[in-house]
Length: 471
Image (cartoon, rainbow, N blue to C red; front, top):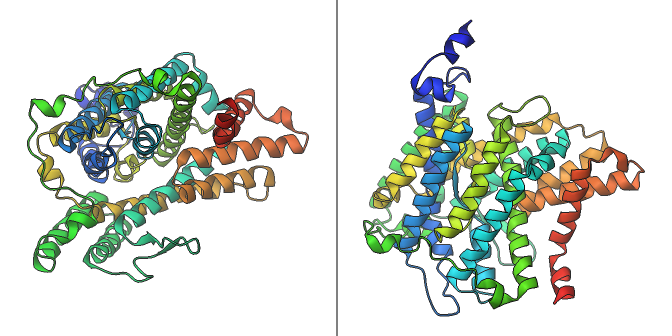
């Protein structure tokens, strides 16, 4: 009876089924703000990554890139919330933007419009795969324990993102060891100290079950960072460390000039085969990144069914696929569902209202960019580390006594953080799972779509040899 009454409510509650999912409007709003605050770094990081000069010497204006990054993220995140009713946020994909800048532009010599044309094409192709139900069929073919492993791997990935961005973990620049604690194996500098304060604070608030603990922790840590910056660092310490730029001017007409500035000239610039391989590489990464992210986030929000499937996943995939093409058309790089959405889920977000709030804040940030810049990554990183812990708990669902699933699960979990790629982790799990089943004479236990996916990943991992052979 209570559920029926909740379902009959109008307004926001009725549309988003907020009561049915055990949430409140206030909780959803807090969760949306939390997600935005953990994702806001992309507004300033994307212009940095997309800053290399192309073959014609063109450098994208940072203010224009920030504007289109915020616009694409805002529009597509609102679409995700309104159409799928899930608390998933969308923005320019890390890794994907790096591929655009450092491979397509810097290495293969494409102009920026041509590189963005690659992204538009891959987004359209993925959208067609969703229309044919192919993408969902692949997701349904994944064994449940591997889905749990994907969630764990994403949790580890989120945690290491937080630790690296905060400066708690750094590269050594040496073959062995590749990573170290802080700088020279010591925690040096106020920014790392602020991160540690924030991490302990968020842990304390969370174990005490303080409502909105992640958001409160981010806000308080930001305040601490501001005080430390002014008192001890003379207002300069968090600029370079947090990878934030100087205050961004309010957008004018030029800031929207990148919208629609894409070209399909990459086919003639690269040649048909290399161009198709470029589209395939981006498409495969985008395809499985979203698959892993949706499964991991759905599990964290306790929205999966007993088979580890996300009800209505087709709507998530429609929006995510369209976001890839929109990101390319806006010159913001491929947009994809963000694993940082887990921070809003951890704050209680369970419906699309969370995403709508996050998207609205992205749109506002077009005009309030200097204010969004106040939040250093050291204030958001502690939330990512705690979210990583929460997603790690899915490991208890995996039977490690069954080696046929335990080894693929293990490879899935460790390859994600070690290679900084959700796609690589999923690929390692899929290929090893298919290989083990085949080698033990149990190929009939592998669904056809898993064979297709495993074969695609064999090509993905061997793309160098395929490209060398074909060209």
